[in-house]
Image 1 (cartoon, protein in one colour):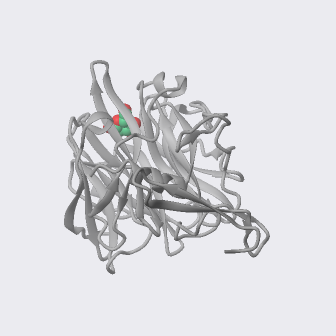
Image 2 (image 1 turned 90 degrees about the vertical axis):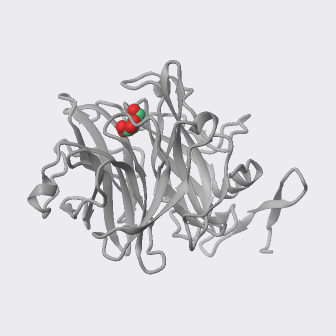
Image 3 (image 1 turned 135 degrees about the vertical axis):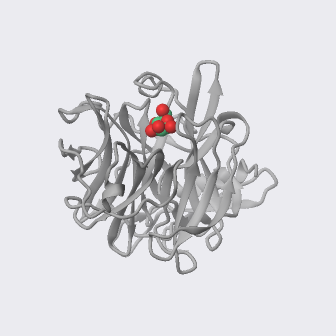
Length: 361
Ligand code: BMA
């Protein structure tokens, strides 16, 4: 143990140790180390953060000043939601879904110093370099951004005679190049892993239909070059309750000592329509199509006014997560009610302990 360090043990019902949290220790730069080195990733000392509100016992809690991005932040927008952000050059950059006032779905680049106050381009991203047949798309929505070896890859729900997974990349969040679509239609929620697995790029996706898709499981695919995809594996089926209709990957999976931490959305069909909630699971690090733990309880479900009221009521739709390995902090960006963009927070050791303690495969 380091000097001044206290350890808190999280125990399961049977007394077994689920996680250990270290308090009081400092890292080499004098910053407090409040979590074990569970996240296998970079430190992000400027991660947006707010402590859990006093009196709350939730494993994931909302930013008190939600929404961080209002629906009309840029003049052209009807709504700005389901968006992806990453650390970029000491600050933050992102790709934002903005439906315009004709209700065309487009993606826009944005930049922020603190991850909370954003400047988003009013002009949508114009991807360059795609084959003409691929470039002719009417829809761009639900983007994710994944950094792999210093390059920022964008995946989004594209249109090619039906919904499919568009793939592009940027180095500077100004010029965006487009590659081939990853899959045949119909598919949505394409999310790249942040490193190659078994020597190949790896992606989660959710085969769907042309409409609002009253079904859906998460699948895993590999590619040697981000163009040709294969080795498809089934990962996760819909289950009961909040995830009984369909599931889809959310933010880029977070690599941890306990496996890939996958935050995902699950959908329930109520008599009033679809209800989108946020949940989590752990995937095997080497064979991510193997789910080792899956949390029976949702982490967030639509309960606030900005999640329950908007263009599509009752939607919590996570698309990005920032992480700080030194502290174990996780900041999740999610779309609320298909209208605005919000933030929620969790601590990795508590979250993994919660998933294991509520494990139902
Ligand atoms: C899904 C996608 C998302 C949207 C969600 C809820 O099918 O279209 O963009 O947030 O429905 O309407």
